[in-house]
Length: 274
Image 1 (cartoon, rainbow, N blue to C red):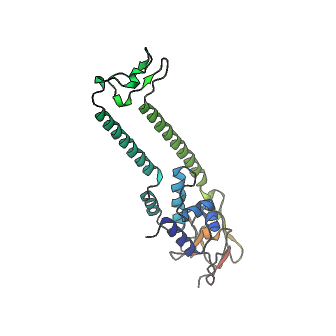
Image 2: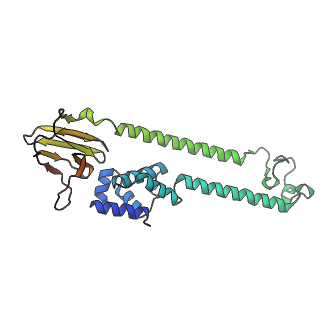
Image 3: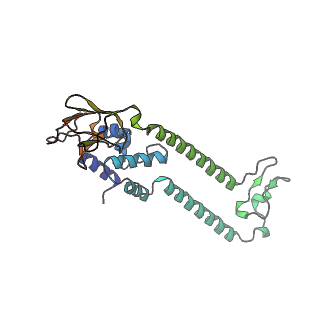
């Protein structure tokens, strides 16, 4: 069975693009993509970004994003897996304490050496606590329950995650503003022949002109967005990122590539319909 990295690399090579081209199209750093293809997912970023980048890259390569993420979790990676391992260590630790207490017998029958060494007047944990957790406390010291420390750490971690999610959400909203705000677009009339300009990933600028030089569309496209334009004559489509744009004709989508070499073209000509 192929690893996640092998599937990503095979899909990228099947599309005939380099790591650099994939990085430009997805807006993800090339060294992160290279690590993903080598099954190295520790990219020193919060887990939400690790999963988000992995899902975006898989979808860009026409792979099932959710399946890739599920396989990622199946490797024992991610926050959920680390939480499970932490829980197991905590349970085993409590079992060890219980066993040690059982072997010790009745603590009240023989005072421990630790108890005998406590300075007279020192404040200690009440006798009804588990003897295995007994700790003397010097006068004036703080008696902090370890369980409260763990709860505080968990709350702090949760607050950090919420802040990261808020920052990510604000960035997502600002990056997904409608492209129509600053785009030139000639919408087709009912019954006209059309082609669609399709955003594979977000692209800053795409232009389409007819044979007479009239601009039918000029502006950005969002990922998954389709803009239909009239196709009454030859259409010229231009973009600096052709791998991020496709055209849709008759319900089928085509890449902006040279049919002979398969190379992406920054300027493509769609012949007039017969």
